[in-house]
Amino acid sequence: MFSLYARKFAQVNGLEWSPTRSNVVPPVAKITNENMEEFFVQCWEDGSKPNVTQGHRYINHILTHHGRPPLNKHHRQQYASVLDVKKGLEREDKWRDHRSQGADPLPRETVKKILLAKVHGDDGKIDLRKLRNKVLASALILCGWHPKDAWRIKDKNVVNLEDFHDSDGHLRPKFLFNDLCHNKLRKLKVFNTIGCGCKGSHHPKNIACPYNLLHWYQMLKDGFDEALMEKKPKLSRVERRRHFDERGNLSERKFFRSITKDSSCSKRNEIIPKSEAAPAQEHGDRTDPLRLRVLATHPGSRTRLPHHRHGAKNVRHVRRQIHRGIKAHASRCSSRSPPRNSWK
Image 1 (cartoon, rainbow, N blue to C red):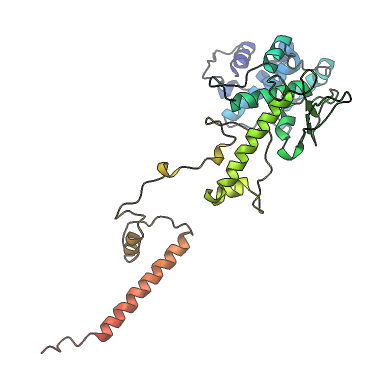
Image 2 (image 1 turned 90 degrees about the vertical axis):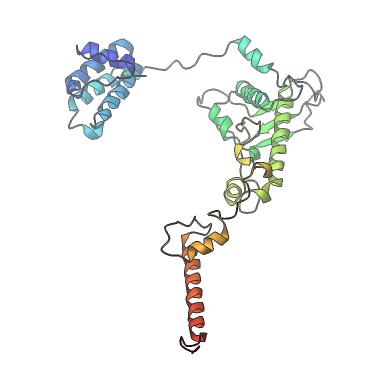
C-alpha cells in the first residue's frame, strides 16, 4: 500500500536505502523533520491534496513503527516545522477548491444487465443469494440510495401496499419504505417507493417486475423468521437473547440480510441436529457425575474438576458438603464400633 510513497521518500531525500514490497519503513535515523518537509512538498507537486493526505498516513506509519509519536498537533513540540509546512499547504486555494471526482456512473448496458439478471438456479427454483443481490442492486439504482441507507432499513420500515391502484384504474402494488434517511449527497433526490413495472395491470409472475422481486424476497425472509420461531425452544440462552426480546418476540431485524453458504438468512439460526451432536459419554469420563463425586472426595488429587455450569462456587460448595458427610459418617461409625479388645 505504501510502496509508492516509500520510494518517493527515498528518492526525494537521496537515501541509500531502497524500499521493497515487504519493507517500506526507512531507518529511524533518516526520519528527520527536514526529510519529512521535503517529502510533503514533493507530494504536493505530484498530486495536490490527495497525495499529501496519503503521504501523511505513510509518515505516521513509519513513525509509529519505530515507537515515535504520530505527526499531529498533540506532538507539535517535536514536529513544529513539519506541521507548519503542511498547514501552509492547506491554506492554498488549490487545496480548498479540491473536490473528489467520486465513482463514475454505471453504463446503461450494466444497469440493463442488473435489472434483467436471472434469480432462478439451474433446478428452476429461486436462488436466495441471487434474489437478494438483485433486489438490493435494483433498489440502489431505482431509488438513488446510498448503501448505508439500505443497511439501516428494518422490517418495521417496510410497508407492502398490495391493493394500490393508479389513477387509470390499473392494479399497481408497491413497497413503501418509511423513516428513510437522506443519501450521502444532499442535493440528489431520494425516493422511498418501489412499485410495479409491468405494462398495464400487474402480473404476479413477471421476473422483470421490481415489486415481484421484493415480494418474493420478503416471503422467503418471513419463512426463515417463522422457522426460527419454531426452533426457539431448542435455542440456547445466548441465542435467545440475540434473536428475541424480553417479550419473546423477534428483535428488530434488518430487511436486507447477509446470506450464508447454506442459503439461510443468518448463520446464528442454525441448530445442530441430534445426529451431529456429541456422542454419549462413556463410563469413567471426566464429565461423568459418578467420577466427579469420587474426585471431590479427594482434595489432594491433582485431577481438576471441569467447570460447572453454575460456576466454580457451586462446585466448591458440593465438595464441602461431601466432606462433611464423610466426616459425619466416620464419626458415627467410630461411636458405634465396639472396643478394640472386646473379642477377648
